[in-house]
Length: 362
Ligand code: TXA
Ligand code: MG
Image (tube, rainbow, N blue to C red; front, side):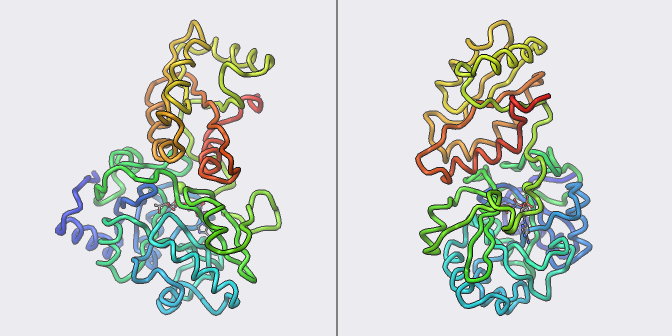
């Protein structure tokens, strides 16, 4: 059985030894917990795919210590091929890597030391430098980067506490280092840097588009809006899903247009317990009145609507809803902010992948 241990020096040494021997370790980061293995050891990496039941076409992110978190050092280590980037792209990578350590992953030309298994056969590699003291302390003890996808079974809710990791991956890990609850709560923003320094957002995260545009001093394209742009193999299928049927409402419960309201009532009449994800505490107190005759448990993502709080609590709240034993889960939308690609864009992205839209349900 995996053990959750505090990040003491002896436990960090034990985790490093376990990784060197090809084992898996539960790793805290500021975004979500990862399941880590030595990234250049194909046997260790294959254990990640097996533990997560992850499709082999979905590449992993390499995590590096702060000392290695720049283009020149990544190139020297054989992780990235800097000369495959033109000078403008190199400049953009240098600007972006100023945000390391932090919740940013850069997709760059793959260097010669990275095995094909780690990148699922792609000629690019995803690199990130996590902003968590335990992750950094572990990385510094090793002479290789760590491959670390989120420590959930494939398709399930990402873990934001060591207990979540234990629940998800049980026996597969040697140790789970306890780094406390994750400060950000959503996975890193994934960005591809291409010819002439063109920047494409592959996965939205807490580092938002406006911040990236300020950093790079140029436009950031959204991959989903443009089929010609690079995509993230892991984002094309359903994700973050609770096990309970989960429907996303296009408006707050009480504001649904009549046909959808009828559809929801019909669906709710077959349920005895319903869990509802609400945006604010006030929304959560209003919702039960919308669905009379059913036992409703409404959980709020935020006290008063702070998107950072919503991001931090999203996955733990989805887990709490899933644990209710309800017949049906509903999500009210999180309201759009002024900036359409701000942090709430990342929140809506995760909800869209986790739930079926009420109007799409057969
Ligand atoms: O915050 C995070 O990034 C967390 C923590 C543990 O660091 N990790 C994480 O890993 O979210 P994972 O494997 O759950 O998600 C990685 C995403 C996937 O959507 C994958 O397809 C994409 O990054 N990705 C990895 N390598 C890629 C590449 N070479 N090109 C495009 N997308 C890539
Ligand atoms: Mg994941």
